[in-house]
Amino acid sequence: MLYLLVIYNCDRPEPGDPAFPDALARVNAFADECRRRGVFVSGHPLQGEHTATTVSVREGKTLITDGPFLETHEHLGGVYVLDCRDLDEALELAALCPMAEVGTIEVRPVAGVPGLSHQA
Image (cartoon, rainbow, N blue to C red; front, side, top):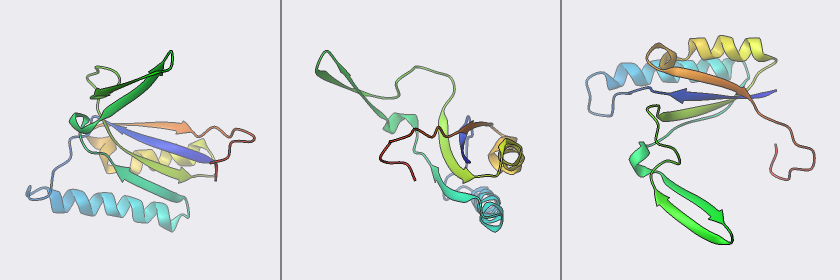
């Protein structure tokens, strides 16, 4: 079953920061462990909220707004998509994710929708 690991509130060092090489090595080790287990589908860090653009359509009119949809104290830092045998394995891997030590990892099953054309 596909699970989305959503990473919140994780301030990560940027390239050039002395802490970056170690942080990168730990994240790569996590991804390698997911690959070793055969569950890794994809993983993507996100740029900051200041780069977000929100699109909505109301009564046929498109509204484009700079910034995230909601004003929130949490920020979305990235996602992993894992194909785990069950929730227990997804939770185990979320706990191994190095970002769980400084942020929060939300684990959510991906919904299978019959007839949805873009499902794997």
